[in-house]
Amino acid sequence: MKASAPGKIILFGEHAVVYGRPALAVPVIQVHADVEIAPSHDDRIWIDAPGISLLSTLDALPAEHPIASIIHNLLSSFGISPPPPFEIRITSSIPVASGLGSGAAVTVAILRALSAYLDRPLSNEQVNQFAYEIEKLHHGTPSGIDNTVVTYAQPVYFVRGQPVETFRAGTPFTLVIADTGIPAPTRESVGDVRKLWEADKDRYEKVFDEIGGIVEEARETIEKGKTKELGRLMDANHVLLQRLTVSSTELDRLTEIARKSGADGAKLSGGGRGGNLIALVETDKAAQVSESLLAAGAKRTIITEIK
Image (cartoon, rainbow, N blue to C red; front, side):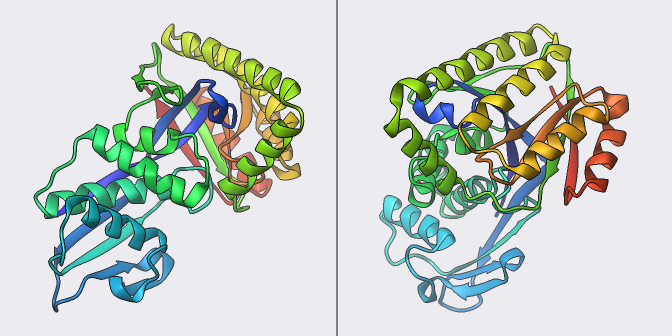
């Protein structure tokens, strides 16, 4: 039994989405997590995840281990005890802690493969809700956007606690995604923003409102196919994320290099402090922007088209 789930990137609205404002995010199919499940060669459950040098039986892992917790929680929800032995192999081309939704993609791929293997298929809604519960175990107070985009594998407009809305671009547009190579632990940055908000709610509610306004304008711009205008909105969103203290010297430097090398706009994406930045580019400039970012120290780039 096999299943796959894509990576994701947040276009607009990170951090503010935790406080009830909207966010836009899109799947990145160039990177993905893949899971294959087969009968076990003995009477145990085996987990093989070569990307993180993991080869272990399920019972040898602590219950709170990220992968073990997915399996334990799913088996428990199905009321399956004792579970049948099986081997689960996990591979992923999504960099860890980079804002591309690695954890959510692995979770969704495991859920789909394992539920199918056990002949207990889950709907998208069930997968999404289950994946969100797993995200909460590891990220404290996540927005829910990672699991939502990865589950539905479509661009989404997302407001926490409201039904997911998918959307389409009136005209395709191209992004360069660049990885700083600096780990971006979501829990830490989300927690720091919460401390700022708790200390001065009026001030930071205004910042969240401004970000929310950018998101609404960006969605309308995308749907009308006026994607050239997104660059200005990216730049404005990045400034607001700087106010939330979730940017970094490296992110600021690379976003500026992206603009100088031909991007129409650029911003950090995700938790910040490291991880990824995204740059809006004309298709014929994507390669030169990518090369400039790599020459400036980005560890990898992905060129992706959003439709």
